[in-house]
Length: 117
Image 1: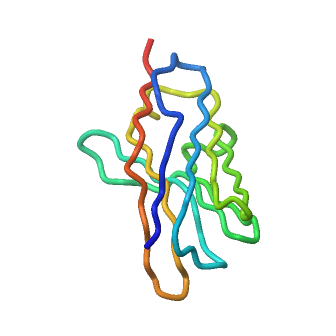
Image 2: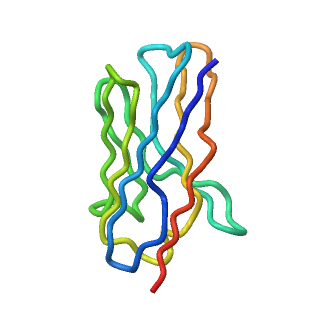
């Protein structure tokens, strides 16, 4: 089993910044994929940013140029630096870890990000 714990959410004004962190523990496969999804009220969960063990990254068009994801393979952590936040970024953010061999996907408990003046 794999456990993921997120931290760093909160309330921020438009134009502000937040940094989310996620730490994975347990039986972690390598290589693997890690990253972030988010879900706003009344909407489906959507991909925000993904990163592979090799450091390849992918971002949703809506966050390109504003969000940056990074990971530490030795510590099994992944971060999401969010700059120039907009009200439409308000959502619960979930980190995940994907095992490409078994197809298993593990999720964190989610952390609330609210962008409001």
